[in-house]
Image (cartoon, rainbow, N blue to C red; front, side, top):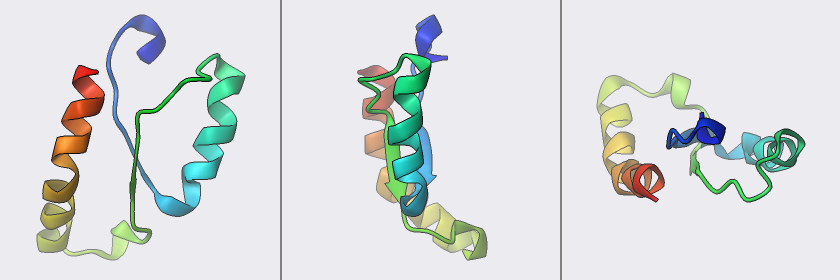
Amino acid sequence: MEAHGIPTALVITEPFAPIVAGFAPTVGMEEYTGSIKVPHRVAQMDDDDLRKLADSIIDEAIACLIA
């Protein structure tokens, strides 16, 4: 989407961040900085904890989308 001019914000758990860093250059996104890292195991969080997590990253996500 970024390649088509559509801003994105990738939310990814910390253990997978190196995969993004390694893969981005292979698709021409050497300068990709839109990853927002969150703690691993979000699948085990309840709704309240997920809302708190979302609240904690909302400013970073907005910054990715308007950069």
